[in-house]
Image (cartoon, rainbow, N blue to C red; front, side, top):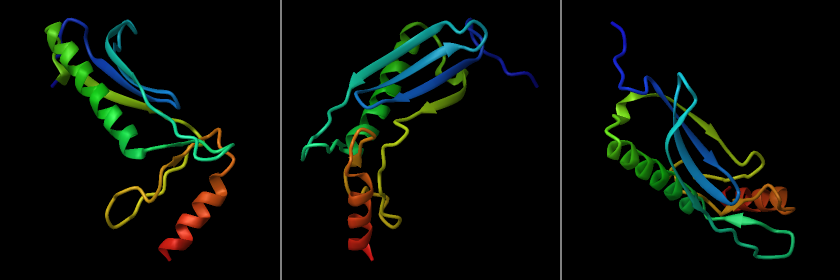
Length: 130
């Protein structure tokens, strides 16, 4: 049975998680027209010179908020969020987050791609868990 979609046809969502902002866009798969989007800045921490960190929970919450606000904007245009047939994700490439496999909570802040402390911080956190 064919998929029935609204006036924009099937929609594609994109989560774009960058080092300075998070955004979610929804566009028409037929025309590439952006139908709705929301973007918000996310903060960075610099605990030492050469170190860049972000709170992983803040990142996750920003993604959730951007998705929700974009869905709200779709509904304001009488566009059904169920028309989204796929979602892609872009991320920060070299940013590292260590998660506790039991609790699902982060063990430490996200260590940014611009930081020089990555390998040291990861090893230190892993050693504390063993």
